[in-house]
Length: 112
Image 1 (cartoon, one colour):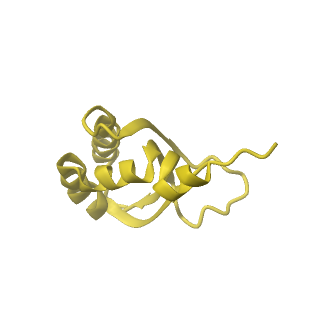
Image 2 (cartoon, one colour; image 1 turned 30 degrees about the vertical axis):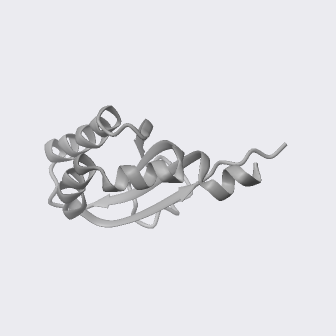
Image 3 (cartoon, helix red, strand yellow; image 1 turned 60 degrees about the vertical axis):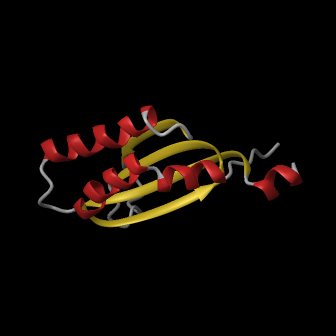
């Protein structure tokens, strides 16, 4: 396990929280989400993609409305994803539509 962590191996989750600009239409939002989801088919290191909207009753979302979660086999996989030409092209479309964003990568740990 220690060697796996040191080498960046092991499943890594890439979480992006987003608040889209008010002027982003529902149609444009749908295009952007479909574009994000399509990356799983063109970026080999991206294994799984999920997304959803905030449904919390705690009202602690700080304005973030959407969550995008991608799964990778390693931190190196995230680096490949970030540098992949299709991701770069998509990010140039996606990021300008955001009012704010927060990105966190983490390695899931189970508590027994």
